Each structure stands twice: as structure tokens, then as C-alpha cells.
Image 1 (cartoon, rainbow, N blue to C red):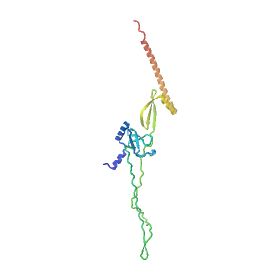
Image 2 (tube, rainbow, N blue to C red; image 1 turned 60 degrees about the horizontal axis):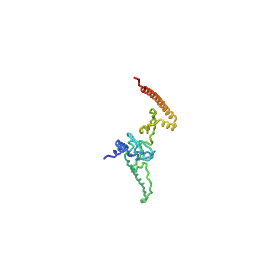
Image 3 (cartoon, rainbow, N blue to C red; image 1 turned 90 degrees about the horizontal axis):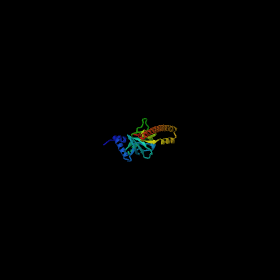
Image 4 (cartoon, helix red, strand yellow; image 1 turned 45 degrees about the horizontal axis):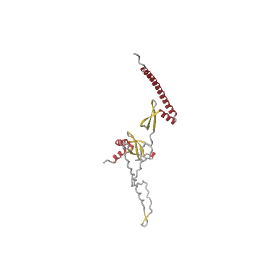
Length: 242
């Protein structure tokens, strides 16, 4: 049976390598895979233990879509739990000691009869000591900073040569899917729609260079075709008389 220290250490580890393997297998099978946030995210109004659907797993980085948030956020494996963490019970308040009763004095009359005097506090130069334990001030809990904002998304359009273009997407520093091939006319229309003059000029310059190279190739092939036709015509001429 493990002690409290071993249990606490196990909870802090988050998702293990075996957990990541099981989650990856579930995603590959098309199943809905759910994990739970270890820490709260106040900026997104998310509490600790909020469920989150797993979108993708890349090494120890798990991209999830938390409940109630229309976005996908990357987390490290140690920031997530496979099961919902148990709620923490509140610590009992320290007991306060009862105040010591104030002493009362007696005075004696001249005839020897005792009379009860009015109660009054006893003063002393020494500081008063309380019998109860002094409660220790609660130290503020420090939370590790969590990721509260989504990673930036970068869309890159690349000329692959001979009028071929590709579009790739990066979510933060991680590549999302494979590059998609697009035609030159679609790239040109997209740049004009964005209205960035520098981007339009760059794309049109690449397209013009590709157009010039294509026309040159067409001229070369046309010349080769004419030469081939002439050679064929000579071969198909009338046979010489014997």
C-alpha cells in the first residue's frame, strides 16, 4: 500500500507514456477520447477537472478542445489527467482558545467583615500570554502558469515550380496536416482578395516567370514536332525505281 507522498507524486505526473499510447489508439480508431485539465484557466473561465476532447497527439503535446471553449489548445502531458481528479476537501479552520476570565479583588472592612469589590482588570507590566496555540497564517497557493491563449496560426503559400503552388498550415510550431497543391489562378485570386500589394506583386512575378518558361517549352516542342514531321515525310516518299 502506497503512502500519501507516493499518491501525490503520481497525481502530479499527469498522462504517462502508456496513457498517451492508449489515447492515440482511440483517436486512430475514430473514438471520442476525453481527458481532464489539471489546473484552472481563469482567463477562459475553466475550472480544474474540466473535461476536454482530444484532437491530436504529437509526442508529449496533446491538443484538446475544452468543454465550453470553441477553440483547440495545446497542453503538455503533465498538465492533463486521464480521469477526473477528486475534489479537494477544505482544511478545517484552526480552533481559537477561549479568553481567560478577568480576576476580581476583595477588600476587608475595619470590622473584619469581608466585602465583594467591583470586578476590575488586573494590569501588569509583563505581556499577557494566551494558553491556546496561535493559528498560523495561511500561505497563498501558487499556481503554475498555464497556457491561456491559443497558439498562432500561420498559412504559407509556396511556389513549387512550373505553375504549381502549395498551401501549408502551422498551429504554433506544429504542422497541421500535409501541404495542399493549388493552381496559379486560385493563388492569384486569393492575393487580390487580400488586397496586399506586396503579396500580389510577388505572386504575379512568379506566375509571369512560369508563363515565360512554359511558352519557351511550347516553342521548343513545336520546333521538334515540325522536324519530326519532315523526317517522317522523307521516309514516306516514293520508293526508287529498280
